[in-house]
Image 1: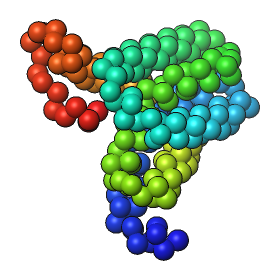
Image 2 (image 1 turned 30 degrees about the vertical axis):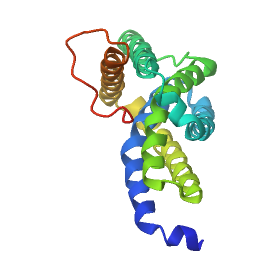
Image 3 (image 1 turned 180 degrees about the horizontal axis):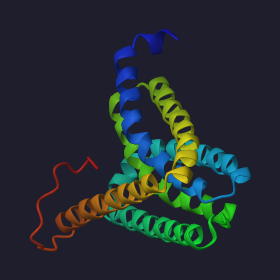
Length: 213
């Protein structure tokens, strides 16, 4: 306890980082769960929390090794664009059903939602772990507390967003746009890093920092 209270400024900084960074993951969980029947949404949100916990622990252990892979951002960016397209197709289908029948069917399967959450979590979790680790430095207790805070916040936000996104479809479209933007940003960063690493000679700017994403 004394170790945590003594590092209160760093802990507050980690909490602020998590408010910003966990929101992206929460949007994915919310969008994935919103397409499910109401009885299955809590299961999807709980799975999202568990998946995030496992991924953040794994990434915190191998973060530096992952950063050495020049293609990691490209794969992550393409994965997020794939998820954004899937969400957009679901929203368009739901809108068409409401227009023709007066209500959406919510016939999306739980496994489909869980797959979307996993793919997006893999892509988005790395930046969260690296940001928290940069503040926690070698303080393992602070790192664990920071990761726990991010997991809880994402779960709470995801459950709330699932209800909001199902009710207000225009917000769901904003969520899809956010995921697509993050995917394009990761893809661009990956291209910049691969251009520098592989000496491709493309007219792209140099990476700002080899260790930053």
